[in-house]
Amino acid sequence: MKLLPILFSFFALSNVCTGEKVDLKVGDTICTVGYIMDSYCIDQNSLVDNPSVKPLSQEGPLVHSVHCLVDVASCVVSPWEILNDASGGKGTSYGRSFRAQNNDELIAYAKVVGICTDGCVGTQKAGLKAAVTGTLVDLGSGGVPATIDILSVTADTTCVATNGVITAFNIPNFSTEEGSLVKVILIHGSLMLIGWGFLLPLGSVIAKFFKHRPDGLWFKIHKSVQCVGLLLVTVSFIIILNYSNALADKESSTLRYPHAVMGVTTMVLGYLQPLNAVFRPHATKEGEEKSSARAVWEILHKGLGWSTLMLAVATIGVGTTLLAEKSTQRAFQICYGALIGGLLVLVVTFLLADKKKYEEVKNDEPQNNDQTDV
Image (cartoon, rainbow, N blue to C red):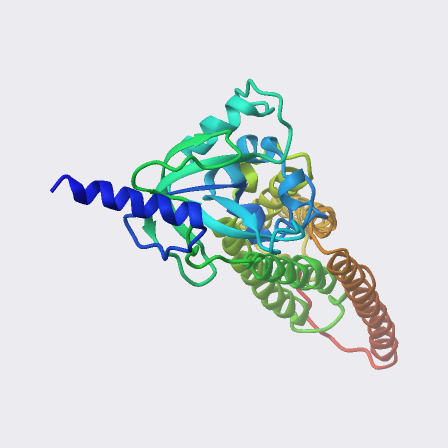
């Protein structure tokens, strides 16, 4: 009976020595040497500290910083992965071999060998590489690599063949897929561009320049447009909160954290507008003297509204700089500055022209329209 373990060990070792490929299965103990990267960078298709660099490119794993892994919250909490050469030994591209079930062992290793602001004692700045041994717990699927429960992490450049440890194998679900978060980010940006960039400013412009029309038409349009705009940005806000941890990314060297803080502030101020509108004092009719409470409320509502829109402009502007692709950055910036900005200018021009024309007609044919301020 003692002969069986010996034969098994000999068989496993002979596979390693001859280079024969072994198909892995759940429960196998494996050892692999590769670069370590967080799945957040991979999913957003850009490195947090180097946004112009693609994670699985030739330079991606080499310039990916230990600081990103250990200090940036979005990276720390995402599953870390082990990357291997996907270009047949040329080192021109990398693929995702395994995903860690738990990052603790990898984090401890990174802090020992690397440079960061959260307890690191090493000297390595980027390109974290290690020999990782672990137990296969899942074969992976849908572009997500196989998952391993990590047993040990060392700085060795090769795996040491020991009894029961497989070092030559067919990697299950070896993936070169990246950028699964890109669509989410684009949806978030597009909805914010439509909501905060166009609809909510449009509603404010209507309130400012369309009061000459009778029957409180401006108020009906203003309320409808603001509700639709606020609904869109709320959907966008929920989406990004579900996929991003940017509010905790204070250590990021980019504008991610300032953008997150500005965005949350903008949303909170935006929600205050319909709330204070509910408690607005009674509107004054033509000929009535405006109450002091109404006057104060109008200053607060209008001042807060325009201030929030100005903050939204800055927030969107910062957000466009965070997009990884330069072409996408330019597309959003052109769309925001030229298209949306141009449309708002056209709307203001139309409303001013409409007011002038309406007043001319009204002067020619006096009408007794009871206008209220709503």
